[in-house]
Length: 283
Image 1 (cartoon, rainbow, N blue to C red):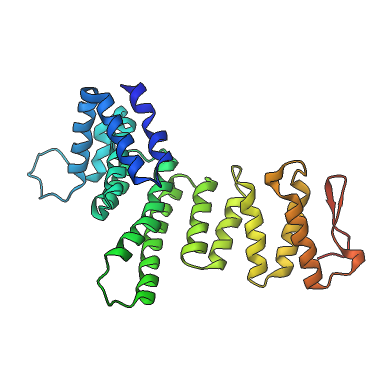
Image 2: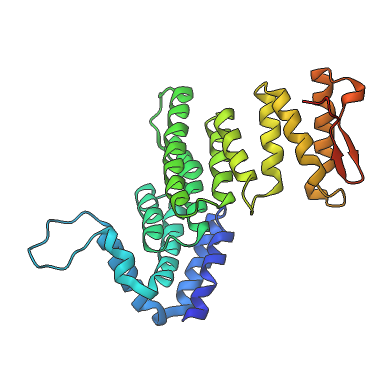
């Protein structure tokens, strides 16, 4: 059973952008494991039921509700979360907003350890559900204003969800980058996005582009001297033989900022033997 279920997260993670592929693969996976996963399905359905609002329990009755899901499942919570994640994708494929939102939160309630649950759940909330709501709005509504409202509402919901993820993983760069992306691409808030890219860049597992984007956003915000100092500090640590490091791109941005700032020729940044040398008079 565990061998069959072990592949589910990777299957689901790779098909986030294809509902047709999702439906066929998910259906095939469920048929393949057949009756073996029936107990897990029952546990998953129990977790779903526990997450629904319930009437007050009688005195002495066992406690129920969302907070009990992980405790009740014990060592099976990872497997049950995988089942729920497939249910989430099936709801997503059907564009069922209510079920998708409820299952996204339930999955991490059952098992909050896999970061990809948090990241992909946030993307569904911020991107996909926005589009569903846009498509479902009545004719004659103010498209521009309504779009802004929908984007903002869903972006804030996704950010709130990711804030919960950060409480569990405060040193995870991918979560910080996801929050930065939402502020930048959905909300258009360059200042807040820059701050989240900066936080991501300072973490051990940070992708190289986080520091580059932070420097670029500083420039776009008009903070050119800060951008220049940041990029001059960043460039020496970029391996010139690694295309993904984009050392040449960073150096080009440095040169552009020197022109914009009017940095004298003698005070300009000079890479020396793979390490930077910033002259004494440079600020």
